[in-house]
Length: 323
Image (cartoon, rainbow, N blue to C red; front, side, top):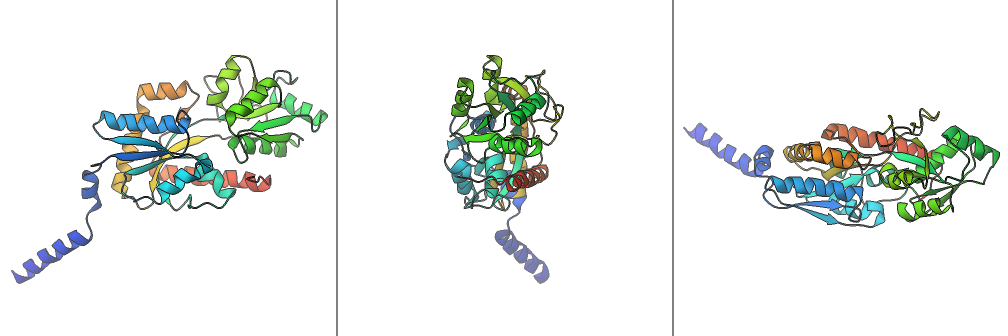
């Protein structure tokens, strides 16, 4: 009896000092979940965050979307990195904050160590669009024209270090052409100047380029995805156009602070999968040129690491600077 009593006392002490994570997860969530979005309302990151929030609301949970803009997403990322690892603060992380900015500037957070990945939700591709006055019907013709007219063509981007900037610099490198970079503060002004004929081309996010393409205001030459997109079935991939290195584009996923208990991460992963697997959600994103991905936490970590390595290599080789 004394030995049994001692073991029971020890078990009680251990239970207090080291609570079992699954028990904590069974009670989760017992308070509102805050989903931090690093961009203004209306963008892809915002739509992704609100898709999950709405889905959680539908099962009786409370989720609140909070937009924290600035620093190219770094302000929001840093806020989440320094939040309690209890599952009540999530973050819509994306290519910029997790895979590009770390190679361009000193950040107040560690993109690799300060977050626990939940899932990649959606991704898109960049599409190379040119002004209709450029006499090129294909990417190879564009490269040939640029070589015959060095320094004449310009490519706009959404800003220094954006996927459009990096893709443009990569095209310059692999094609050996002389085209000048013109950075803008966002995609909208870049496309406006392209439509007006002030710049020659833009690597734009497919979602944002579709209205101008359909209106005939810009001409698409290639898409930077592994397969053609159903929304632009006649536009070849960059690989089909002879430039397989030009692959990749924006992506958006969910992250929580590092050291968040794994049962909570798994619960969030399952809920994100449910939210983005709904036929209505898939159709809504597909109509915007976005592909639903839905990865496991391990697959997410591997994907982000590969993206960071790939973008970092291009940034270093082409000497891209954040101005």
